[in-house]
Length: 90
Image 1 (tube, helix red, strand yellow):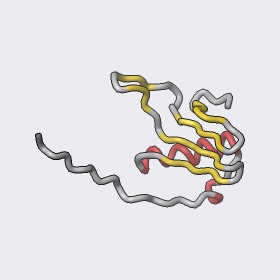
Image 2 (cartoon, rainbow, N blue to C red):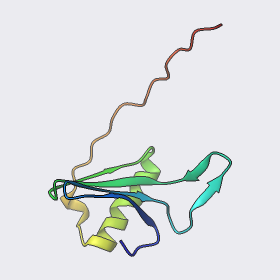
Image 3 (cartoon, rainbow, N blue to C red):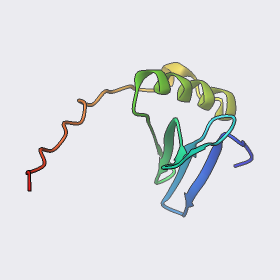
Image 4 (cartoon, one colour):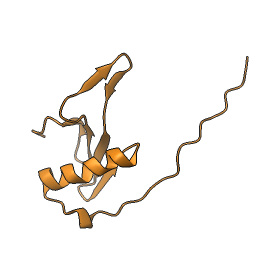
């Protein structure tokens, strides 16, 4: 909770959710950019997600540094890229 790179957006008994902003929060006209997120479910399961492999490489290192989790303790899985939905023409 005291790391400037992580911003807690939810902290309840069942779940906690942090956004990884990085060293500095990058703002533009569309909002604040972030590198990924970390979710703790039921105080047992840690879910880490990011939109690219490069961003995903940063999060395990951050968790190792801040929480002492070893990189080998994580199971990585990739999901298929999101397919855009066709928009009907007017």
